Image 1: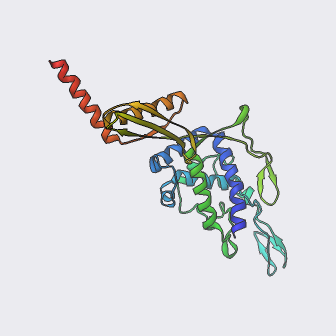
Image 2 (image 1 turned 90 degrees about the vertical axis):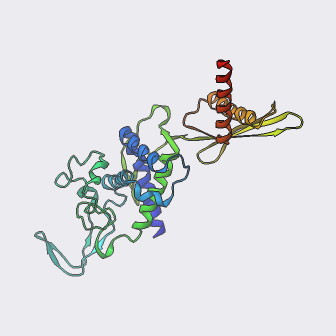
Image 3 (image 1 turned 45 degrees about the vertical axis):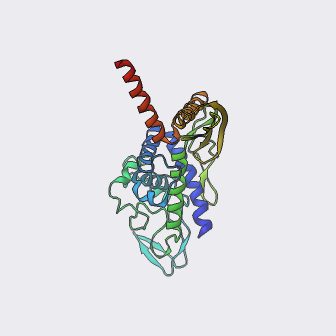
Length: 291
């Protein structure tokens, strides 16, 4: 069960990333949903997943167009029977062409188009239970894949993490292709190669003051959304107020963000001290102006 759910999931993950890179507007909608639900948290929790309907629709649409097992696993007829006018002899090996069924224009509007929105409607009918006979990437009936819950959670969790923490670019102006190759699973003919760019940079700012000597140290540590240290520094400054030291640490953090041309930066410091410090300075300046 573990091998089946992980191997097919990794292949489907590659297909999902490929389709999202081919359709930037769909990718943008996914990241907007992730930002709205997860916010500036750097880790995706299992509790987030039920509140990500568009991401779930992306996963389902990927399974529809690129089913990892396009013919499912072979079945065998236990007795001779007739189906839709065809005689199926006893002990026949039977394959279900899920790849063709899930691309059939009789069941799907514009079936070759990557359109996750189609799964936002009739969600109960188009699930993984196998009761919908034009969408059953995991099979149906008593022989349905037992790894569905694991595969679905792994797929959602990893894809959400990849898209929430990073932006993705194709190297050297490449374009994603959708050529297929059938091995144990239906994989891409050419592996997908992408470059990750961290979406969130956390800059931790802190300082320490030696009141007796009027000296202080300010420091910043810059981490990406995975927690890996990107940059950092400490500096000895002259100050006699804790508020001044905190303001200096924030300034130092801003300098690092500007120097590295970082976007989506989160500055972490004692914001209350800085806020009070700025209010006091503004009042002081206002009083001086009044005098």
